Every structure is written in structure tokens, then in C-alpha cells.
Amino acid sequence: MCNLTAIDLNLLVALDLLLDEGSVRGAARRAHVTPSAMSHTLARLRALLGDDVLVRAGRGMVPTPRAEALAVPVKELLTAARAVLTDARGFDPASLRRRFRLVCTDHVSTVLLGAVEALLAREAPGVDLVVVSVGADTMEDLRRGRVDAAIGVFPDAAPEIRTRRLFTDRFVTVCRPDHPRLGDRLTLDAFLAEAHVLVAPRGSPEGTVDALLAERGLERRVARAFPGFLSALWHVAASDALLTVSARLVDAARERIPLRVFPTPLPVEPYTLVLAWHPRVDGAVDDAWFRSVLIRAADGLTG
Image: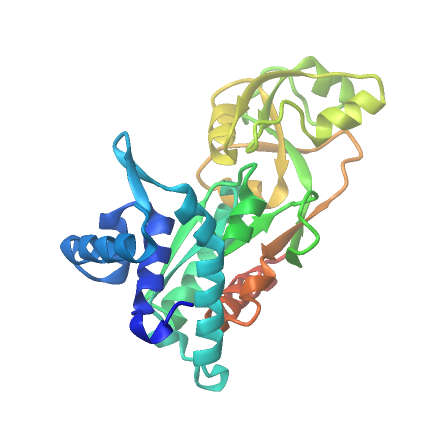
């Protein structure tokens, strides 16, 4: 049996950082120590575990299978320790020094993160925020603690993932202001006659509009596909293509991107964006505060 009194439990913190960053330098930066000190800590971990922990792969480093298997248990231990040692009544976000990782699209970051930034600057100037793109592994990233929270539409979320409604949005169709063929109204026939842009953050070749058209035996030409919403908007502003996209995003972007806005000539239902997190961090006071920042920012949205 392992004698815990003989182990420096700060090594768990270092191990968590090393696995998060995949880099001695990155882990050192987050721990506010020198790369040399973190390299020494990695050597101690290797000796303790009898494993290399991180190994070279090209220009970076990747975890060994043993280290990969330890990632979630170590994250859970540290989260539990934080919950035990933090007095919720005495929690002060102004003294918090931590980096949070939030998964969302550029739609969400454009609409919401201005209000989030204002709250962070006022309440917790020592907090860093890293925005991570939505991907096929988002739910697994939450489970493994690689990210702290996610905002989006997650119909495939695992049952254990916690969710909380943040805000609703609806679709509109946009084009450039001087489009040569569109009049005051956008009919379905005119909609189908034009080329379209599709935003596909997860690489899907079809969207909600395509599914609705297919139900009616109709099809549109998707001439361009982009992984991000803002790049799609800029393309539309410089082409004759149409884009069916979030009304909130269009409202936020219209001051900088010239657009003409139409009601979409299809019965596209509004949709709800949710905040998602893993129950492992339910008891962590700092995580709960960060989620409250996101919720309060969403509550401040108009419309």
C-alpha cells in the first residue's frame, strides 16, 4: 500500500497541468514556475510512477497510456480537494487565479462573450479564459476535464452531463445589400434559385434548412461551407450567396459587416443554446461561480 505521507501531493497538481498542456513550458507558465522547475517535477513524477508520463511526438509531447489513464482520476481528486478546502461562504473571485476553458462557436462568442468579459474584468481580473472550438469530442473533453464548460446545442450529450438553458435564438437569411436579383421579399423560389453558404462547425454536410427542404422534396445548392459563422458572414457580404444563420449573430455583426436581412421562407423553429458541464465539478465553488458568470451574461441578452 502506498504511504501518502511520503508523497508530495503537489505532484498531482503538476501532473494535471502537464497532461492538460502536453508541454513542460505550458505547465510551468500556468504553475508560475520556471520551465526548469517543472522539468524537475516531471522527473519526480516519472520516478514515482515508473513511467515516462510524457514522451516526444514530433515537435510536441503526448501522454503515455498510463498517464492518459490517470488524467480523469487526477482531475477528479483535485476537484474534490478544492471543494473540501474551499469555504463557499468565504469565496472571493477577486482573488481567484485560474484559467477556464470554455467550448463554444464564434456565434456564441460574438453574442455572449462581451458581457462575460465585462463581468470577469469587474469580479475576477486574475481569471484567464480560453475559448475552444466545438468539435466531435466536446462531450468527452468535458468528461475528461480537458474543458470546464461548453455552450451550444448538444442533442447527443451523455445522460450524466449537466445542462442549463442559456438563451434562445432564431434563424434569418442574409445577403449583401446590393444583391442583383432579390427584391423586397425573399420567396421560397428565389431562395432556392440562389447559391447558399453553410456553416458546419462539426463538418456536417447538411444543416437544419436542408432537412426541412428534404421533407418537402426540395434541395438547395450549398456552394460554400465554412467552419465558422463570422467567416461565412464576410463571404456573403462579398458574394451573391445567401446564408441562413442566427438572428442574434446578425444583430451583433451588422455594424461591421454590411448585410440585408430577410425572414427565412421556411418554418424554421427557434432553438435553445445550453450551458453544459460535467457533474464532477458540481461541488467546486470556483467552477460554480464561473458558470454563474455565463448564466448572468446570457440573462442580460435582450430579445
